[in-house]
Image: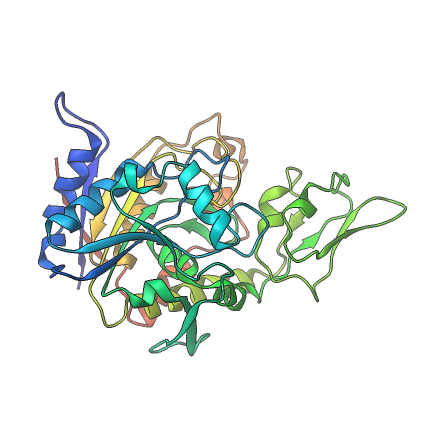
Length: 370
């Protein structure tokens, strides 16, 4: 059966803001059908890597948190620590980064909790019902302690998975550092020595010290014994000298993300929101963001994260590409913007596997909210 996905565009009449539209959207989508009374509610969000300006503004989170509080719930904002070098790889700097990007109680009305603790080791091993790649998942404890999960997601491109939406925010984003390693460890990128200019920028983004440089040529190489496959070097290389030659490893990553997402939401109420604006080609984990590849589209909400992501993908692919963006530079126009941006990925593997394990349906009925 088709899942209902509720949608509203970015246009606003005089006297109505995007924030009031978001509140109306989530109410129309049925968030009030969940019994929030005295229930701890994890609002899974991406706080944004400092330097990146495409992440969701905290104003969106305040709308969702205020609605949950009005329904009697106890909401908090949460994310797990990262594998890579940056400002979110332990609980203390992660909280500093969130505050720097505007996420703190005075702006959102709720507390920030780093789900897997200071060192990224505070996790719970959760069974994955129907898991093919993962029989269990390592999820940040604070997320598993919650009674209800709500995901608030910035939809964008991603260098390893093709796109980042509800499934990736819930799956990869809820995994502890051990969980992230379990999801990433099939993919091992390689360096094209003919393209590499030896700038060493990639090494700055490697938390595993896996990238070395030839003493004579200065060219980079990756030690696969140390590499965990997080993919940060792929996005860091401005010359596209680093690639993942094994497409199946990207597919495996996508499928593991779906399985981790299922581990997070199974057995408890959950609700999901995708904001499709400032659709950057890379993840918000980067300390920078490239120009948006399409015009802003709108906001989607519903109970099925698979349908939500599929509706967002369809909307992105139906939108005109922005000529001055990386999408405009691509020579091959397949009609699939996400594939044109990241041709080594196949986003379909995430959707199809999520369907296979019973997480949701890629079939959806779009309900327009004006």
